[in-house]
Length: 121
Image (cartoon, rainbow, N blue to C red; front, side, top):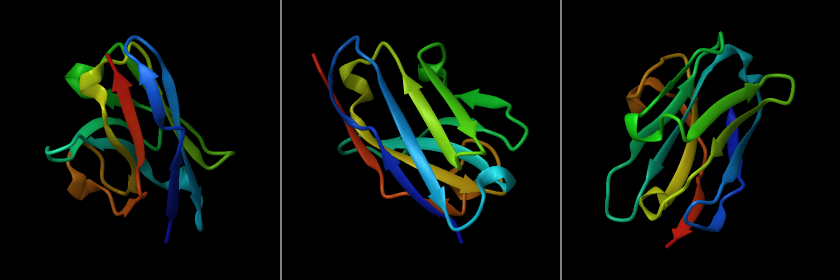
């Protein structure tokens, strides 16, 4: 079992940046593909980014060039650097770990509780 705890969310003005962290415990993350998803108010959860066991990354189109996902296996942590934020990025952000890979939530077995990001205009 892997326990995931997100942090780093908060209130930021449009155009600003935040870095989210997701700390894992229970097992090392080096054996898992990792991802970030988000859920905006009144909307379904959507894919943000993923980083594979080997470090390859993939992003949703609307996040390309603004968000960067990274992993630090030594710290058992995955990060999401978010730049040029806009109000449409307001959501609860979740990290996930699993043996699958891709943009489907079904690929991931373990989920954090989420951290809220609010972007003001």
